[in-house]
Image (cartoon, rainbow, N blue to C red; front, side, top):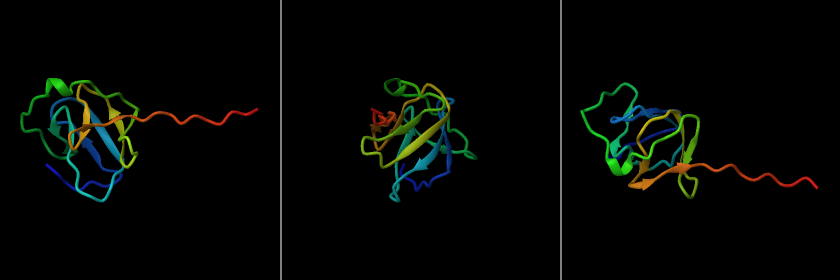
Length: 103
């Protein structure tokens, strides 16, 4: 289910304990899922969905998640069993940028 998201929104999983905060997203509507189920805005309740075993890789508290092009970024505020995906593509942990050497 595609919806409009904006920076600062708090989202939660319908199938596990995972909670994320939107840091950066494109203006287009997105299909963000955790564990295979569409994310919920913090005041919405779960409809009894179950986690997809193929998307149960987990998410880690305090890690930033981003796509390959870094057009979107999420902060995991509470870890859980579900994998974060956008439009069917897994969103991975953002890697730290290497600092220049000081010779």
